[in-house]
Length: 70
Image 1 (cartoon, rainbow, N blue to C red):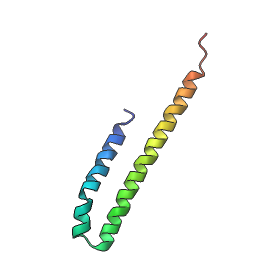
Image 2: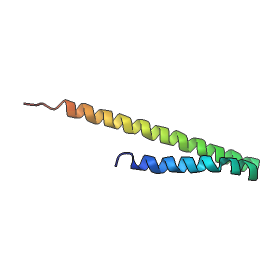
Image 3: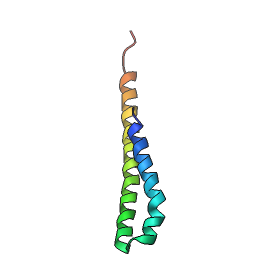
Image 4: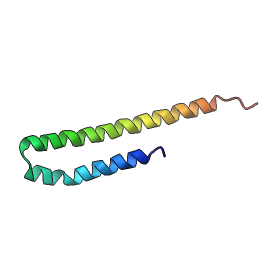
């Protein structure tokens, strides 16, 4: 279940990227800028979540490796 949320956010980012050319053609300049900011923020948020997920996994492995095997 670790990467289920990442898949959903990834689908959102792909859908936004697919609609970006349409938004740039049809919307006003300010709306296109707002769309670009939202797309950039979504991609950056996904990158932060991936990084935190990897750090959490690494910390979990370290904690489990410290267990005594006696």
